[in-house]
Image 1 (cartoon, rainbow, N blue to C red):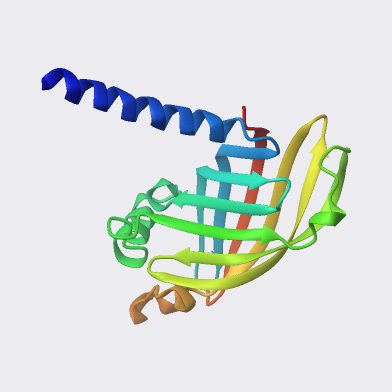
Image 2: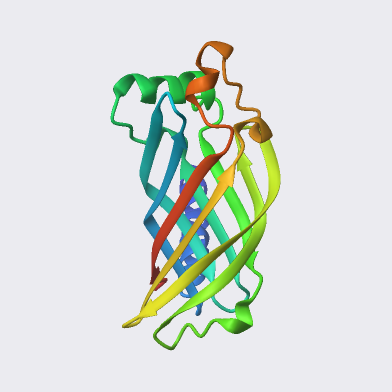
Length: 190
């Protein structure tokens, strides 16, 4: 009986590995595990900046589908107290550990991923922060250079749109619109 259980477990592992290996060999897919997402809040009272260099993304060059996943606790701040307040009070990162974007390139036909150049693009999809998902559209660029691909975008989000509650005592220190900067260096899935 033990031998049968072990054989079944090995078969499940083999099927799982084969599926993962097949997915990673899919042509036309790019990925990164070291993408960068930053946010910036400017008010007359204070500037707040958080940087995250551990952003994951998958881009399908054939369909234009793009997925981005951000581990919220990976944002780094100049002041430790800002980081603590960000995680505990505003983002509740122990409860909502990830932010996600699922979308697509709207003008895929305008981008030649095989030719060096910088291509203006429009991306649309759903951005989920905390427990709230909203449709977003943003303009960005894809730069192809020497077989490498970089995607960049900058857009604004309102904390109130994502159930991020700002206490009245610090309301004047946090902008109503937060600037988000995305910078993704992709490599081919092998």
